[in-house]
Length: 433
Image (cartoon, rainbow, N blue to C red; front, side, top):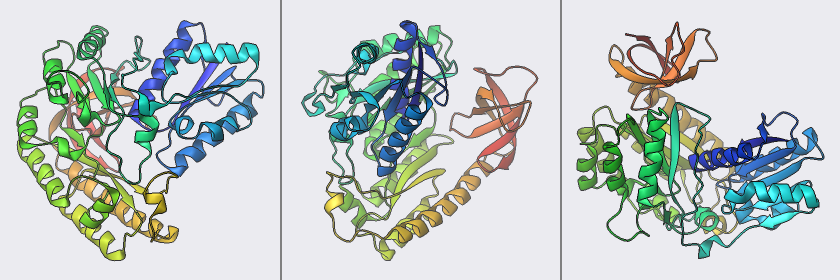
């Protein structure tokens, strides 16, 4: 039997897809690319935007065309938010939400045998426990994602994630340590701690557990040379937290601080819990205390009520603080959120114009950031061959600059000192020393 996966959305979804893939392999399935004929297709969905829902439906249609007799399983946030809508799509055999993914092989086999649709979507708002979905044999032997937290209690006015993932749940600290040690014993050099709202790690645990304490423990585990943290709420970075983080040698100086808007009035409507002045001070403190810090972010344009003046305030703020990378999204109203019902929805053409302006600013800022490191030597963890130029490998510096270098051997999984010499769009060319 063959199984094919496609994964939309965040790093948590990527982690969970790999864990589910491993379960199929253990049951004797062969994993094939999603564009090939397969007996089972699994779509791990995202529902952050309407685009995510649309892509999910496109992937379902593609699977149905490739093999009309295949078992199609749709899991994840889209299934959780709209189980009836998903179950009514032609050809869908199994519908799981953001829970029960550990039993996916059972439900797929049962659907194949009984030829009846199965819908298993639990009420995540009543959930209080972290669902263990571990990976024992990573397909990528360079760096590993480690999901340590799920759920979100923030309820931003545009976001469905609390309804899709439920309340904050944290992985048992002892199990985190055990999994990190296993990764180290399997020669992983880098791990990425991920979660839906990772800054909330420990809120549901007894004792004084928090993300800083987990990072301090991992610092003392032999074998792991780099630790990254996924997208994180800016308010996590108090002066005390930054002081503690600055002493960690393994922590990569790359922080993805979701901003969403550079205008305080817009932030209020979004129900974000910080001001632009607070964000500015956090960025400044990280740069002053952590060498070579790279700070990236997400920005939403065209949020309801965003006037030309508010957008200009956002633009000038981003022009001033010069983040190393921005991911720009056009606001997409999600059914069931407060933002969907807000007046003053912004016209699509205006969103396009604003998005284009910020993307151009992002390119300029990214080039300026990378140029700071020309003629410097930095350690690069190489991941794979660079597909566009034969004989080159690609990897990342600790502060997440993409580097390509000419190589005469397989560099995958190795950390090498590289002299950075030339900036291209999206990466730097370097020479291994």
